[in-house]
Length: 353
Ligand code: FA5
Image (cartoon, rainbow, N blue to C red; front, side, top):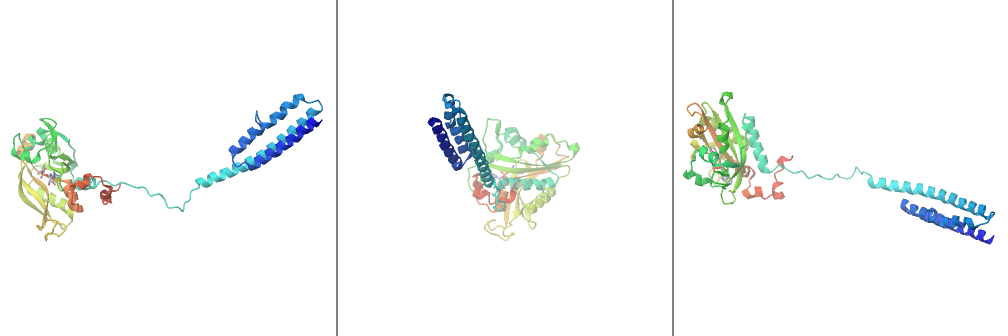
């Protein structure tokens, strides 16, 4: 009889210990481990159950009762603790995920369009508004279009002014956007109306890089061909363009110049928008700033594209986008455009996406 009493005594001790452990558990995981420790297959309770076979017929029910008493108290305490711990864990998780709407939001960093892109798009917008098409041409170009069809046959001395990077004898990186003139002229159907186009894009020259020159830069070509186009059309167009880009009070002046693909040819100056023509450091005291080259399309250029110069005439112009962007934004070195220094680029936020 002593043995069964000892067993029951030991079980009571075990229950006390189990209830203490349950009360001290601080997480669902800890509780799970307690259940394994006491009621699992290899748990403490099983050590008692296994002794059942060795007990007498009177002793067996006594141990059975003690075991079910243990299980009842254990399960009750376990369920209570489990509920409390789960509630606590849920509260903690919710607190962690809670959204504090009074906190300041995280600022998103937005990029901006590059200042050259902004400038190009502004120029495009102006000409689109005047009914021009925007047409792009290839950067890797044939010598035939870049030079010959622009009235610069092989060995023409003016080719020296635009030396470039050659892929082979006949293929090169274009030195200007002018070859798009020839490419467009040869496919335009004049029975459907005049040709009015601009062509923006990258061009390449074997120039040494300095504050105002780069071996790669961007131009915009302009070309209008119809019957009866004159210098007056060119002049009026460029005046409207200059007022748009540099201010309503801007005037322009045409100076005689030379390009093989235009005749007559001119350099176009605008009144200095800093001193309004008075003379300052920006315009080197002249009151004028050169912005582009232009002229009436040379009859040879029209002829080589299959257009009769006795019926059609046109004007063309070409400007450097970097130059316009530098003038308008007071940028003193062309190399700033290409160095991707965020401190420089962020000063021109006008073009946020
Ligand atoms: C031309 O390229 C002619 N195709 C322009 C033209 C078109 C004239 C149609 C008449 C009719 P020019 O070599 O001057 O011309 O270049 C035009 C502009 O490109 C210059 O005014 C300048 O702003 C820019 N430019 C020329 N070389 C460089 C360079 N190395 N770096 C940056 N910009 C340049």
